[in-house]
Structures are given as C-alpha cells and as structure tokens.
Amino acid sequence: MKNLSIFIFSLLILGACSSKSLFEQKDKLVNQLSQQLDYLVVNSANDSMVPRTFEDGKYGMITKKDWCCGFPAGSYWYMYELTGDKKWEQIATENTVKLDGVQYRTNTHDLGFMVFCSYGNAYRITKNEDYKKVVIEASESLITRFDSTIGSIKSWDWGKQWQFPVIIDNMMNLEMLFWSSKETGDPKYRDIAITHANTTLANHFRENMSSVHVVDFDTITGQPVLKQTHQGLNDDSSWARGQAWGLYGFAICFRETGDVRYLDAAKKIAAFIKENNPEDLVPYWDYNDPAIPNTYRDASAAAVTASALYILSSITDEGKTEYAELANKILASLSSEYLAKTGDNGGFLIKHCVGNMPKNSEVDTPLNYADYYYLEALKYKFNN
Image (cartoon, rainbow, N blue to C red; front, side, top):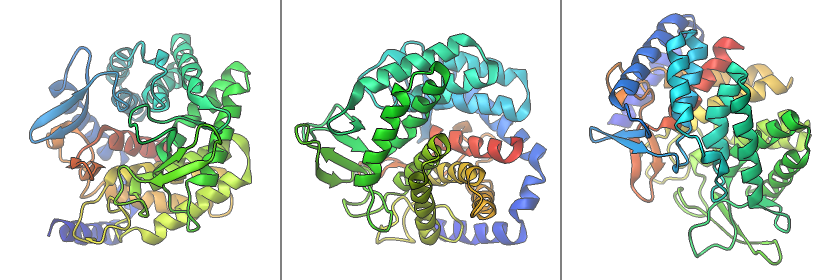
C-alpha cells in the first residue's frame, strides 16, 4: 500500500504540479530544507562524529573511518550556496575539519566521497589553500591503490574471496583525481583516472549497459575472474544505485576528457535508467527484483541520477534539453512524497532509501548521501 500511495501521489505531483511550478517556489523550498537540516545539526551534535542515517528513532553516527563521513559537510556547503546564510558556512567548516587526517588513508578507495565532497567543496567556495592541500594529499593516497597490470584502483581490502575487487561505485572517486591534475599540473592523477575508467567500461557493463556491481581481477594476469553483486539482488541483476554511480562517473569522465566513448556510455546508461524507472522516476532498489512493485524504492539512486543528468545536460548538445527536463522531473518527485516534513526523518531531507538490502541494512531509511546529491542537483538547477 505504501508503494501504491507513493505512485499515485507522485503522478499527481508530476501532472498537476509540474517541475516548473515547483521550482518557481525556490525560496519556499530552500527555506524548508534549511529548517530541516538545522534540526539535524542540533539533534545530532557531536564533537567528532557525523550522522549517516536515522533509524528506529536513533541516529546512526559515524567517525571519519566511514566512507560516508564527508557527505554532511558537503551538504552544509551546498546549503550555504543555496541560502547565502553565513550560519551554514560555519556549520560546514566545523564538519569539514572533523575529518582532518582522513586524506592520508591508503586503505580505502572512498577518498573522493570522503574528501572531495567535503574539502573539495570547501575549497571551491572559499578558495582557502589549506583545503586545496588536503584534496591533493587525498589524491596522492588514492593512487597508491592503483595496479597498472589490472588498470584499476582497488576497492575493498576486506573479503578473502576476492583478489582485487573493483566496484562500480569507484567511478565516483575519479573526479577528485581529474581535479588534482588540473590544480597541480601533474598528469599522473588524470592518467590513472582514465585508465580506471577504461577498465571499468570494458568489464563492468553488459550489452544493455546494466552494470555489474563487483568485478574481481586476477593480480597476475590482470584479467577478470569473477563478476558478482554485493548490494544488489543477484549477480545478474541491475542494482539501482550502481546504475546511478556509473552514469555520474562517465558523465564526469567525458566532461574532463572529451572522449566520446564516455559520453556514449553515459547516454546509454541514462537510457537504461529512463526505460526501467517507474512512473515517479524513483527506482526500486534493484531493477530486477521480482517483487516489484511490492518492494522498496531507493531515493538515493534517484538523487545521484538527477545530479548526473544535470551534468550530462551541460556537456552535450544532443539531448541537452531532454536530460535537463528528466532531471527536473526526478527532483520534482523527490521534492514531494520523498521529502520529509520539518522535524521528521531525524532532520534528514530524503526518505525511502536503501543502503544494503541483502544484509537488511539501512532499508527504507534516510541516508546522508541521498541528501548530498539531492542538494547538489538543486544547486545545479538553481545556481547554474
């Protein structure tokens, strides 16, 4: 019944209340988001930890060891851009410096998420050279995980079942490497990003451009030995957030290189998502779940997709308007039934996300990265 009510409500939103009319209420929407995030900041206050989710009336608090640690600071930087309110600059700064030291970690591939979303936005907005230094240091740490035989940055160090696992999520960490090459003039970061993207394009996608979640490589031959899922339904299914990661990653790769192979990949992934999404454009957690429509949505995948589509619309002439309009519609849907009322949802903005369904972890909960990419998409819509 919950999925049916979301479907009906969203049809009304997308029909009677167009995305255009929704965005004409920018000030009202941004004020609502500001109040909601203010609730989150006050109620999850902690000197060293940040909120990742809110479940069963409790915050899931994390340290800078967690891959999601950079998203709250990034969300607050976006809120500062959207509002111009110095309060958000102060909150963003406090949550960014909580992460000091994470840039030196060499045991994770998630440094783009952890550092570029926080310190990267901090530098972009403030031009404080201290922030810039942190991002470059993080890029230096990240490239230690690159293997030239395989042509990829290693994802996980845990799990004895894999030799060299590479997940589709890793495409999201390449933007930081491209940025670091531009800032330093050293091509090594960019070269590694391109090589990783090429290996991912060759090995992670099926003929219809649905994505495999995990590809394991032989460390001697550099060849793939296993293709499977970790957070999706099964090894042959299409995990919704994985599709969004791929779309975003290849849009960035085309923007940074001009290589049309990446543009072609991004467009084909976008076509897959559009063709397989439900009417309200917020995907079920896995496109192949046989329980559809009686299963969970993943609004985090929709938020990432909306932001990626705005990027895609800004770098291509063919389909430019269509991609922007599709992003507008996704944002309109997220801003209706999926947007929490002030004081609800623990202060998180977006409802109905799925973290890891196979492990029954963070199912139908808010997630801090959903809020981050939702705000990023709004920034693209309102400020560009």
